[in-house]
Length: 331
Length: 297
Picture 1 (tube, helix red, strand yellow):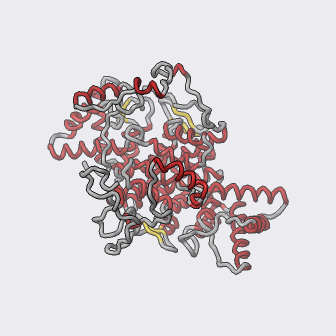
Picture 2 (cartoon, helix red, strand yellow; picture 1 turned 90 degrees about the vertical axis):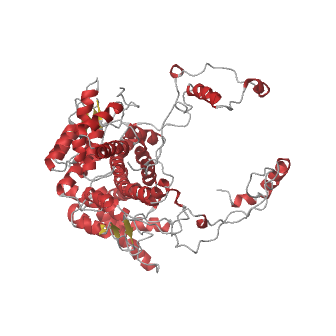
Picture 3 (spheres, chains in turn cyan, yellow; picture 1 turned 135 degrees about the vertical axis):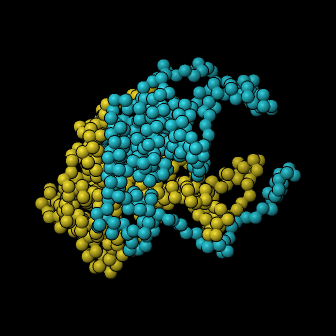
């Protein structure tokens, strides 16, 4: 013990203090700080409005979403538009959130576990609202900085992002009019703004540059209209993921009603689906020294060689190259 | 692009083709175009029917009430999870998952109601009589009567009684009759036992209305809990954008949620780690003495 026989350690392991840290009396005590809501014994208040007074006055869930996230009462047209979007977003068949909910239901869980887990399906491809928000705000910021025509900036960006699942333009809705009808409804209600205009430019550029037929998809339409309604990309991400979770609850119910639960060890994986190493004998512990070799790299060159070798091992994670972004990052 | 579902299932909820998404036979896009609301959609989704206007009004009222509840276990979870700055949906999912047997036990309340309404039918009793039976059976067994009391709103949840009144105005039925009877007999018995009045909570009021609207115990639970997910998303987003990650900063003028001084330790006193040569004898003795059982969880 002591300094573990290593002088680089900057404290002594033998003489470290024991016990917990005393209460910090120099600073204010901890409180839940919020700009969103508070409650006391007799009231629940969001952004200054008593929630019971809101519903007594006829405001509903969709109005309160504007209040919670934007601190304002929406125009009637805005509330109508949010309802329209949420109607369209509630159910999407056996897509990822429904599948997750059903898989969780199969373990004989409770509803909240399944409905909650469905929200985890929303990432940077499925329901990529944070990503498309960054993309659109990035284009607008770039256009403002460079002073070039919007179409020119959009085309330069879209050229590099044609395969991006967060582009909002794809081949997914070539035959389904839902996305285009949503944009038309936003325009009819007078709530379409700069994001709808920008999305139209993105569609135009993608159609010009893509070799495959493409059009606005549900991500593109919902994102553009939600942003024009004043919701941030993060708020949109949260609101629409939760919207979908209601239907994930219905899928939980149906899975529980129609299917038998799934037990630990029950599910088989066919050997035909396996393409890993051939079956091989397990070496004895004595043989281990001969078989096993350490793989620490000592030079960048060695590291690169090992890196590439590791990338060939499916399921190791080495082939995934991504940037885990700080969600606070501003455009 | 592979557009086949991951799992193969027969489903009566919806289908989706390249042309449209259909829920319970209705094109979703057509429903939106026709002006149906999210409240209508929840009836179509869970009940395979378009609701009467009074029913949709009740659901609008109730989901509006459910949405925001400031600091409760769900919002606290969302705030704690976002402290590590994962993707936002992780914090919202955690928030929805906090709902269980103590925080918003909606399904359990619904099953309790069904059981006693069925007994009223089979035993030929009124719902008023059955409310008393329920209360007596629960209290005699030392069980909490679901739907009563709230740890923060000591004089009664401010949303609950207004929800009951709106329920009476818009869609009164068997569930409300039983719930009102439960509340009456629960407090009559408490009074007789010299205990204070306890008001109905949002499970007792809100879940009763959802049941009256035709939502199953789990569907009602889903609506209540997932609704809260919206406000938890707001709390998590606020914390993500305006709070410090980790919630332990010493730079803040206020002690943070995860400041070291927030820890109060009540476990075994600090003790020497035995060496590997001492280990076997040490472990045997520790097991024999059994003092560890006091701490096992």
